[in-house]
Length: 339
Image: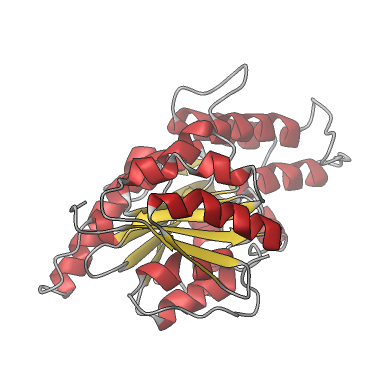
């Protein structure tokens, strides 16, 4: 980042009153920051050019003790954001599709599954445990790589007899997270290319991307022999969509954009990446704007420019895009945005 670009701190409060407003202003004012409060509980502070991004991020834990909020700390990239990348499972949608596949397999096999307390002998229990370990990077049996975790779960589904006909029933339970439709629609209206990049499967990413009106999607492909699941293969010429492969997709999309717009010459600084799991860490680090969405893993939160803990995806319209798409102020009251 060049020195002449000031750091902008944007806060969207889930709880705030006049007293906390005064406390926050008192904390930021000595730094030379000018704090603006909006009617929708949005606060934006532009810090002097002498402050670095890391120095401003270091203030955030103290701010969190004053009032619950979501935040973005960032410096404007010349040209703004041109491509926005999104993880799918538990980010754009509220489900983990491979867990839904395991659940459906148990149902088809005549088992009763308690989602909150599943029996250890169910496919859902076994698959979900690996999913959680892969997402959070912790647990007694953490897979060494995303590909290992994916293939272990696929093998469990194969052993349980997963069939192609179950996929439609799984998709019936897929629901976009609150604010997803509004955020994608807003980005499209601003000319931002939206890309879904997932460690999941093409059957689901194709449908979700179409449902939300996104421009492209990258994921893995399920392999069937007749009706029976037989395995999984990665995206052509990229491979199983792990963290490194997601970062590679970013490079591919940037290259495509520059070929189509020779005068643009954008870089990763002109991209945003939103995700929630270990598989998204490199994307968060690489993007000009990395958003950790309801993510618990400390490494993701440390790497991110922004953190959404309380609001939904619509919060990003106010927090992120209104600042970084252009220098004009974005919309402040958007149906479905925020809390």
